[in-house]
Length: 253
Ligand code: 18C
Image 1 (spheres, rainbow, N blue to C red):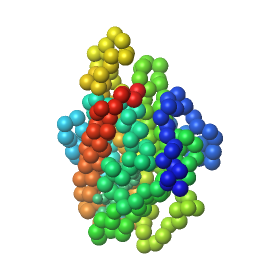
Image 2 (image 1 turned 180 degrees about the vertical axis):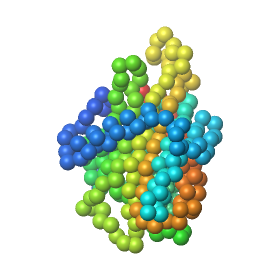
Image 3 (image 1 turned 90 degrees about the horizontal axis):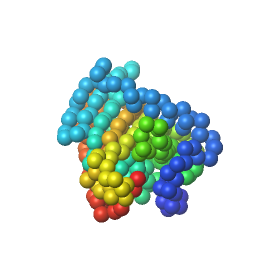
Image 4 (image 1 turned 90 degrees about the vertical axis):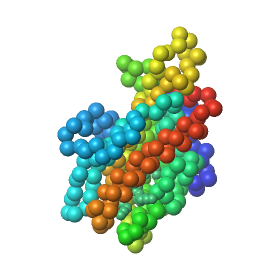
């Protein structure tokens, strides 16, 4: 149940590279690696900058298949005063979801696969004139340290899966999503003693990518305008939420 699931936390599992093996382990590995590779692809070719606000840049690539809009989105942002671990913690943990996510009527955890991986079932707000959407996806959090940096990179991937506890119930339409949030922490003017690092010394560079298939017909122009409005809105709201939550707390590296 969702109540039990709130006890699950990746915090303290700093160096856990791979969780226990289970039926989705291989798929998770493949999808995570795919995102890490894709992250370094540049956005000069075929991507349009559709929104820019402070440090946030929102890119979109227009893709349509059989009249269905599948535009990939890619957002870059730099948030001062927080670590990548903090950003990913608030994005992944069930207990904060309804406080920052504005597209939802409900969210619940329907399975816990390992301490870093759960399966969510979510019902999204209906947008007229489209049918209501729901989503079912595994959500995986992890950190890793590459040899050339001292701060770990944190990442969360949300990837659609089917589940016995989440049958498709028409007229609700199932969204197909592949979302990644990848966060690097930068320490500016590092003090000699790492214990003296203050929030003013840190910033998080994040990349958010979303491949969302609406799962069924939606008017293209309406979908593109909802996406153009909602993605920046999500990232602004989510980042100010994390800033507010962490302001008076010790830094979670
Ligand atoms: O990544 C985000 N959230 C995570 C936690 O919830 C998780 C979410 C995955 C599902 C992403 C798809 C969201 C679809 C929402 C449908 C209804 C949206 C309209 C709401 C308006 C109030 O990874 C943050 C996700 C930010 C999503 C921005 C909106 C994307 C629009 C996609 C359109 C889907 C088609 C239905 C709308 C038709 C409109 C005419």
